[in-house]
Image (cartoon, rainbow, N blue to C red; front, side):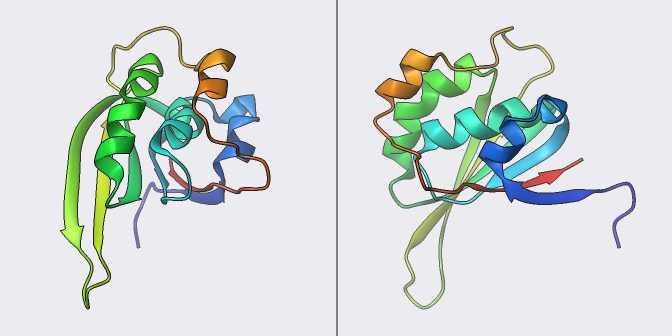
Length: 134
C-alpha cells in the first residue's frame, strides 16, 4: 500500500463548510456532476498551496473551462493541463483537468456571493462527491 497517504471520501460541500478542511489537501478530485465553476468553488479552497484539484469532465469541458477561468483564478488556481481521452467501446470523450494552486496565489480564496448567483447553476439537492488526499 501507499505510505503517508490518507484518503477521504465525502461531498465537497460538506468539507467546504468545515473550516478545519480549508487548504489542507495535496490532491482533491471530483467527478463531472456540476459545471466547472461550481466544482472549482467547492474544491479549490480545500487544496493546499502547491497542491492540485483534479476534475473529471465530459466532452463539453472546453466551454465550461472557459466560463470558469475567472473563478479558478480568483480562488488562486491555475489550469495546468486538460487531458482528453476516449472511453473504450464508444462511450465518448472525457477530460481530466489539472488545476494547480501555486505556492504563491491571491489572498482571496472564496468566490463572492454575486459570482455564485451569476454561475446559473442551482446546487440544491445535488451532491458533489469529492475525494481528498492528505
